[in-house]
Image 1: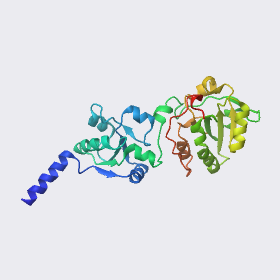
Image 2: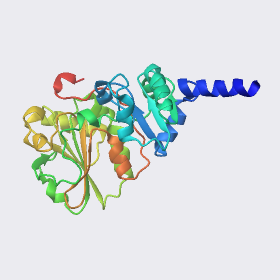
Image 3: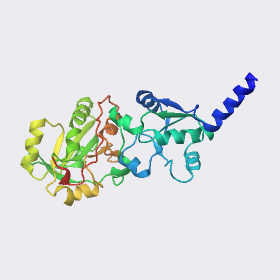
Image 4: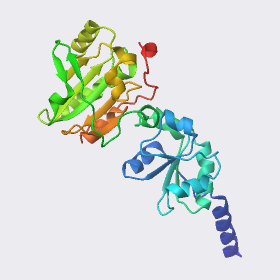
Length: 287
């Protein structure tokens, strides 16, 4: 009798999946993700585009054919680490995935808990879509630096280049200054050059900001401003900050709006930003 009861309980647990979804906290989820775990975001595509856990695939739990779409991405042979906004949708999705044969780990508190803990997020799905993709060559350009000297991007051929599009009036650009300084300090100056293109309104405003904040690297000024910049248009810059890592031959290695991706590509242990807001498309978001 006892064995029959245990077998019935096990069968019911398998059907509902509720006892087989493993809830884990942010730190455990982050460790798994850094170790290469398969991460699934079950929020809507619109939610996903605004920011997501790095490396996460997106399948909307409330959309049609949820399991078949997940199956098309994952083969069921390894655990899935899933999350939604606060945990309710991912709990339901987890039960369905367990029934489908997946081992599932659910993030307690979801994306809200992740961002509250200051963990890395990715916003490239929306904000970096127009940037030049990895593998393509970049166009050359010429602008003046803060000393009035004409500088071409091709002047740095033979070195890797971290190219940053920004403006001092952009709050998120300001927020990433410590990261960029850390990257600069960690990089080998014989191998890596840092070049920033500013869309500031006035040249003197840029000069003052650079001096006051001791910004490193080559600081260039684009007098056309963000909206009319040919350089910005050639590089697909619709939002700032936008960043590129370019190899010694002038090809894109990384194009992103997330400074931590450049830091990772440079293979340095750089502190990461907890920035989670929308980026600047124009001066309407100025401080």
